[in-house]
Amino acid sequence: MASAIIGGLIRKGLCKPEELACTCGDDDTGPELAKKTGIGFSRDLATLLPGADIMVLACKPQQFSALDEKLTALTAGKLVLSILAGTTLERLGAKFPQCRNLVRAMPNTPGQIGAGATAFASQAPLTDADRQAVEGILGALGLTVALPESQLDAVTALSGSGPAYVFEFTKAMEEAGVTLGLDRATAAVLAKQTVLGSALLMDASPEDPETLRKHVTSPGGTTQAALESFAGNNLRGIVTEALTAAQKRSVELSQL
Ligand SMILES: NC(=O)c1ccc[n+]([C@@H]2O[C@H](COP(=O)([O-])OP(=O)(O)OC[C@H]3O[C@@H](n4cnc5c(N)ncnc54)[C@H](OP(=O)(O)O)[C@@H]3O)[C@@H](O)[C@H]2O)c1
Image (cartoon, rainbow, N blue to C red; front, side):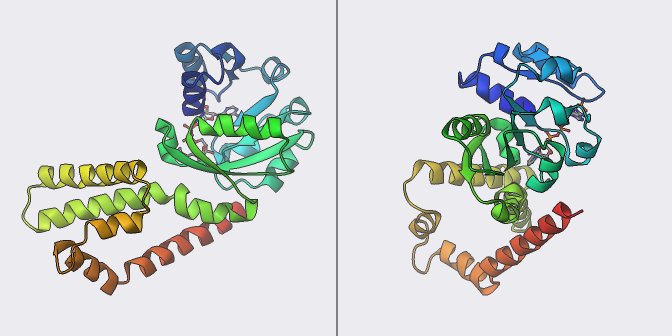
């Protein structure tokens, strides 16, 4: 995700490589990223942080508690932007008590190709300059939405986990195609292209998904037969139940 942010910032011309620098854990991912993009790299936080105005935290949530204690002092006066799933502003605030403001963001996997959806919440209201910086950094991953932190568990359930629902639905269409007599390769390519094409159509069209759905549903036709089957099995209720389970799990995980 850090690579995606850096790649997007440079590609969009929002930052020059020399304005960015990274660190990493015990392996060579940081030096490799620096070599590929032209950004700076140091394992020494005392070298890396003083020249920075904003620190983006993009390690795994389980690596958070092992972060170098020097960061507490080194982030004084800086804006800290975390993309760690489930790590609350309260926990972040305990680690970075002297920063000027804290932002907790929830991105999703399409962010890796700049097509993500990221919601973010800040500890204190953002100044115009900090909001612009946060939207620029997270914008490198795709669309951004500012929300109160209390809504981030719902965001996790919708857009955070959402790509998995779409992949699962695509696989279900592939399986159904095989059941109906198509060979596996044909069913897989048709299912994938249908999801991709429909997503692109939603993006290109000013109409909402429900209206687009109505456009392909002739009364008494094949699509209506399938949609009536979905409705009979309460598809929308099933989706709401699934997102409710994801939201509940998100609340549990952020309290661990
Ligand atoms: N992937 C997604 O689509 C997605 C979606 C939503 C949220 N997120 C959040 O985004 C974060 C990153 O996910 P990811 O998939 O990009 O994980 P990742 O590939 O494992 O990247 C984590 C990075 O953190 C570095 N790191 C680990 N410990 C460190 C330390 N003590 N100091 C500095 N750097 C350290 C790692 O360096 P080494 O390689 O050297 O260990 C690695 O480069 C996670 O917190 C995740 O919850 C990701």
